[in-house]
Length: 389
Image (tube, rainbow, N blue to C red; front, side, top):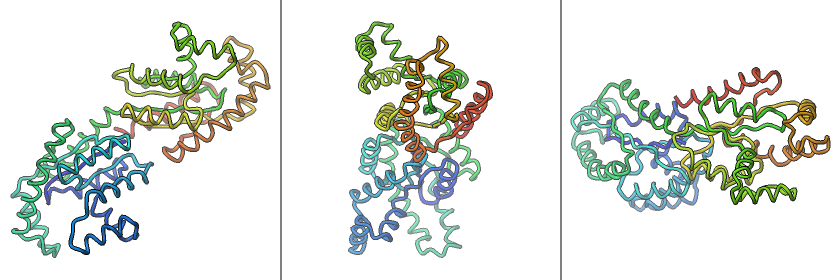
């Protein structure tokens, strides 16, 4: 998720740059004025409270504003991120936004300040006043607005300087140059985010071989629960001994153990570009766990791929695999194969449906040779990576 706050004095061109960022990066616009008007028009509880305050000549409280912002964020889970325009306006609001971001398991990536000298702002606004017909576009009002902006905003800018996410752009440059400078800053932020892929498919669809090959080609870390569990057993760790005991008794490894191993993997790999998750999540519960783990590490799912293979072909492949050294425990009989396929359908297909609503699932034809399928899966990942550039 990309969250950006755009700042600049009146006349800096925030409107133009906001439209550009929203369009280019599919961001949702957070403008407190627009949100308040929307709530008032919809006659929501918050809108009615704000309307009563405004009619009485008062200022809408931060308490109401933050609730409206939180509502907007939670109601737009499909968004790639949010552009905050005109918020936070004060030092206190900066703390409020930081707390809200923490509550929602995300963060502000950067604050971009469009720097424009006062005389240039005055010149631009006076020029706008010649055609806008706005009564507030006169020099006295303009200078009062600029003075108020500087008094309230300078502490906010320092707040984000202290956190290391303040960025500045010469807003007095031509629009094209400003766009290029803003784009460079945003691309730098995106390049620091992990690219995480969840790879789905029925047993026998080729997820494992495709996942390992994709990880190698694109420099991603391959995370599969099976190999992690086997590694713990071979290493003779305490967790490994617990896993071995569960296997011997024919029991499934509980999420409590799997989560520890995935979190250990996420914490133990530094400087990686991202992860490919295969075999996890298998259930809705596990999907919420993975979302939480990634958010804890300041990341999120970037792309979801499902490899599709017809059911009869899956059964044929799994039966053929049972005759080889690659035989899995559930390959040893037709009854076990059918049971495993049914388990995927009943437990994992709902997870895919959930991710399709949140992120969109890209379906890939799993028929053909390994190279045929790999060309298709690679193209999907390449498009995902290219969309971040």
